[in-house]
Image (cartoon, rainbow, N blue to C red; front, side, top):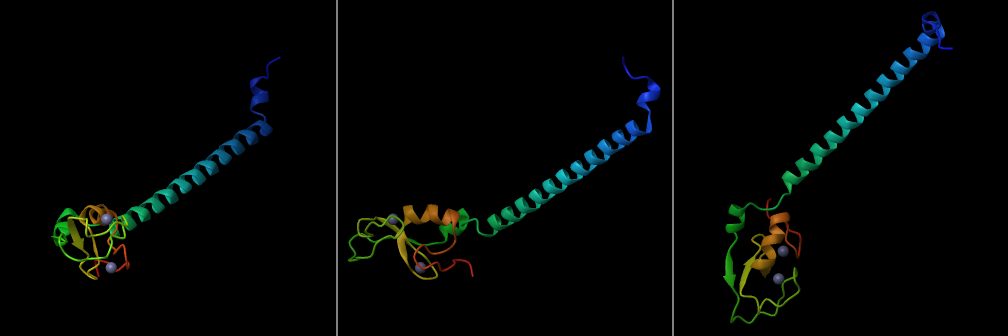
Length: 124
Ligand SMILES: [Zn+2]
Ligand SMILES: [Zn+2]
C-alpha cells in the first residue's frame, strides 16, 4: 500500500526533507571552499614559477659564449662532469665566472637562475 499525500506531508517527513537539504547545502559549501583553497595555492605556485622561471632567450644571449679549445684548462663542467677542454663552446656564469659547456648551461638556465657550482643567483 503506497503512502497517501497526507502521510507524505507529515511533520516527520518534512523534517527529514529539510535536514537532507541543509546537509546538502553544507556539503556544497565545504566542497566550494576546498576548491577555492586549491585555486589559491595553485596561484601561489604559479607566482613562484614566475619568480624563478629561468632566463628568457634575450637574457641567455646576454651571457658570453667562448671557445676553450687550445687553452690549458683542467676544470670540468659540473653539469655533465666532463672536461671543459674537450668542450668547444662554453659559457661563463657572469656573477661568479664559473665556466660550463654552453650546451649544458643553456637548459639549466632555462629552469634556474643560480650558478650550478656555487648557487650564486644571476639576478640580484
Ligand atoms: Zn657540460
Ligand atoms: Zn658559480
